[in-house]
Every structure is written in structure tokens, then in C-alpha cells.
Amino acid sequence: MTRKLPLLTEDNSPFWQGGAQGRLLIHHCADCTRFFHPPAPICPHCGSFEVAPRAVSGEGKVLSYTINHQAWRPDLTEPYVVAIVELAEQAGLRFVTNIVGLPAEAVHIDMPVRVRFEQHEDVWLPLFEKDA
Amino acid sequence: MMFDRIFEKDVAITGVGQSAVGRPVARSGMRLTLDACLEAIADAGLTRADIDGVACWPGDNNNGDAFSPVGPNALIGTLGLQVNWYGGGYEGPGPLAGIINGAMAIASGLCRHVLVFRTITEASRRKVDKNASALTNKTIGRDSSFFWQWYTPFNVLSAINLMALYTQRHFHEYGTTPEQLAQIALTCRTNAALNPKAIYRTPLSLDDYFASRMISTPLRMLDCDVHCDASTAIILSRADVAGDGPNPPIRLEAIGAALHQPWSWDQIDLTATAARDVGEMMWARTDLKPKDVGSAQLYDGFSILTMIWLEALGLCPRGESGRFVEGGHRIARDGQLPINTNGGQLSGGRTHGLGYVHEACSQLWGRAGERQIAPHHVSVVAAGGGPLGGSVLLVRD
Ligand SMILES: [Zn+2]
Image 1 (cartoon, each protein chain N blue to C red):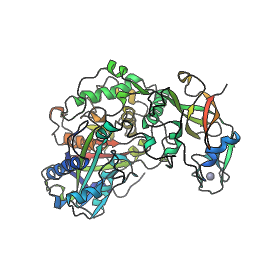
Image 2: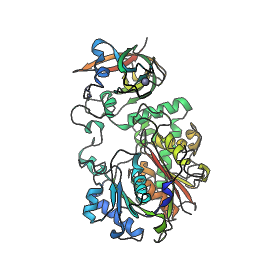
Image 3: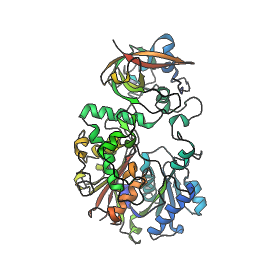
């Protein structure tokens, strides 16, 4: 499956490239000790600049999902699962991703999942599979 | 939320206009725009010389995009308008941003009569490029968008995937069913049958709905609005001169805007979305209550959004939209709260925002022809999805 890749910046490259070391890096604020996403130079909770990417467990659960059936590009003929995964570290800490490695029909809300990186050029996409 | 000055009370709608609506229409985007704008100006009893402001959402994207091929600059020059103010641009509280911005220009003293318009030529464009509106086409090469880069790498290439995530979560949290969701499409089609300008007017059954192609579970083809070519125009006038024209002024009683959550499709409340903020703001700016609303024109770019708007505007309790629309009797033209009386965007055509305002005014003025509903004084219009949202409460005294 081909991907449209993100343009890397100083702010977003930890998220998109942490997978090179097998780590899911999420921005964290040293002052209020909360994670936030998407990554930015300032903490949206408290306004602190004391922020840095920090490795999380890569564990989470499915908040919502959809099975896409429409071939938006000629190569997208197989159904695929788009989901919002909430990370185990903090309520509300979440992002859109794909659920892979199991039949689309088997995905459900609250299903425990674990990150699995997929490399495309210099980007390691954080995808998720069922946490056994 | 407390507001000590409600600027929109200085503003009223005095005229409306709309081009042909078709799939496609063999007219340029500019010609459609002129058809709509000149009709609206005449409807308000004005001439071109009276128009001293122009507002548009999203305006010209400087790329000829069929999503918005004509902006204020092009229209002002083409029509030879002499304005004191104009404005456009995508960043604002959704498809009604032109109404809100135009009203602010009047309330600030810059303008007396603002022409608000919205042109879309997606039907023509899709004849030559079926994926014209895909998110992959918004940037060439890597996705440099501050917002879209979080979705396109995961092959979220249409907004429907994001809407499907909201829908699935709504089903999960509130027990909303596919049959209930289908009612939005069915009601719109029933209404469209009485609208000579609607794109799809043939009867639609629940079986037809379930036979329509699955795009992104649980959303089907018939949950998506229908692309069209069209332009719609609305004349906003300062309250003290609004009574000079032929139409009874329709006052802007209150506006609402999505302002308090991140501009993001996945960081917002997944079942209330930013629409929640719109309703809270709008009702904080008026003494009227949801029970006073006689008709509602609620954005149906995707069917789930109409359900979300019903809840966000307090027209039914949160989580109850499925049960509220079930069977369709409450939201029918003769029900307690008629919605999308021209067929909405699902069957009427994706005029994208101002079409709802046009229909609300047509109903309040009693000029909706065969689809006219019972006389009423208050109508609410809301448009947008996800992080985008705005509303306006309209009153004909
Ligand atoms: Zn902080």
C-alpha cells in the first residue's frame, strides 16, 4: 500500500521517525507532566516551552474505527481500517492511524492494540495491531 | 458564556438569490455567481450601487479549485462594485463564516448592504477528474499541511473516513442504529421531490438505502451529499434600512461559532464535535430557546452531521438524535421540527452552506411553493463538520 508521506519538520520528526529505534515518541511537558499531540514547540495545556518527545509504551485501545471500501487511488482496492487509538499513558491522548494484521471485520471499539511501525522512505508510520 | 453586545441584532437578511443548480450546469462559475448575486440584489429591492460590502467563505483559493472558483476580488471587479469592505478566506467557523463576517462589517459601521455569496462547481470538475476533491490533491508531493498531515499518511483521503469515525463512536456510545441514520437521507429525498431545483427527486426507500454502496463503514453512498454546480447569494442589510425593501426583514437573532476546541478532526469531542461550542454560543446570545425553533436547515454534507447538529443545538437531548429522527415523523415537513425542507445537500445538491440560508428565508417568507411548511417565525441554520461549524438563528417578526 503506497502512502502520501508527511513533510518532516523539527516539530513533527520525532513522531514520524521514532520508529527507526522502535519507539513511539509523543511530546511531553516537563512543567505540567502531561503528554500532548500533535507535537508543537509549546505545551497547549500550560504554555510551557519545557517540552520534548518522550517514548510511550505503544499500548492503547481503539476509540473508533471505520473500514474503508472506496479505492481513492487505483492501488487501494483492498478494504483497510482507519482508527483513532487512545494511548495507555493518558486519557484523551490519541491520533488517527490504521489497524493492521487482522481481518477488518474483527476490529472493534475498546480493542487493545499495540504499535507496529511500517517504514516508508524516512518515515516510520505508527500503525497498530491487536495486542495479544 | 456572557456577551454584553450582540452585534448581529443590527443586521437582517433582505434578499436571496440562487443560480441554476445542476450536475453539471453548462455555465461558468462566474456566470453562476452573477446569476445568484443579481437575483439577490433585485430581490432586496437594491441595485449594484447599493452594495458596499462583499463576503464569501471560503473565497478564492488562488488555484481555480472547483470547491470555490470565485472569490470577492473577482466578483467585485466583474460586477463593478464600489465597496467599503470585503473579505473571504477558508479560516473561520465554517460555511456560514461569510454571513458572520458580513454581519460584523455592517455592525462595525463599514457597510449598509453586504452581498454574501458561495459558488461551487464540483460537478463540472468531477466530469474530468473523479478524485478532484481527494485530500491527496491538496498538496503536491509530501503533505505539508499543519492539519492534514496527521491523516493522509494513513490513507484518510476523504473526509468521509473521519465522519465514519464519529458515526461509529455515536453508534457505540448511544446505541444509534443504521436504520435511524438512514432516516436523514430518506427525509431529504422526500423533501427534494417537492423542490424543482433538487438534483435527486425520485422516491427512496430504506431498502434502496441499504442497497447503496458502502464507502467507509457505517457510511454509504447515500450518506454523502451530491456534488453540483451552483451559486447562492444572500443580502445582509443594516437593521435601520432593512425595512425599506420589498421583503419583511429576517433578523439575525444570534450567531454561533466553533471556537473552543482544536482545529483538528481527531482531537475534538468525537460525538459532539465542535458543533457543541456553536450551540452553546448561539443560545448564550438570545432569550429564545430551542423550543421556539419552527424549522431547521442542518448541514448534511454527511448524514451523521445532521444528527450531531440536532444534538448540538439542543433540538433534541445529547445522544438522542437517533431516536428523535426514527421513523421520520418528527422531522417531516408536517412534523414538530421540519428539517432540510429543500432536500438538503443529500438530495438537493451540495450548495455548501448558503443553500440552507436561502431555504430558511424562502420558508420564512412563505415562498417555498409546493414544499412550503406551516407559517413560523424562527428558523435555525447550521453548517460545518468536525472542527468547522457555525450557526445563525433567523427571526421574521
Ligand atoms: Zn504543560
